[in-house]
Image (tube, rainbow, N blue to C red; front, side, top):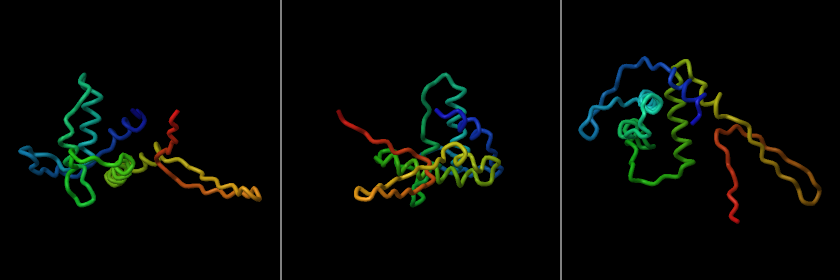
Length: 137
């Protein structure tokens, strides 16, 4: 849903040879960059609105190096952070090495204001996600 990211991501060229491994009866390239490109390309060029996540789940490893466990519920913020970290590593040797930073990074400012004296303290951090309050009415 972010065309600027999608089209630049598809331009990344990974010159490493395929790392074919057997997974659940299929031979799959264990390369996250190429699997994400395959997914983006399929969704862009196909009339179908869905694609099997089997290959990308195999290439996207958890902290222990195991393929993604699709039956396990994860925190979305934690997942996004891990995905960005893995993609950033995959993009380093390509011409798109700064793509995630260029598209998603922004400065977020936390501001503390003293209730007694009115003194203000600002803390600026580079972030790639937005935290939004959810208000129940």
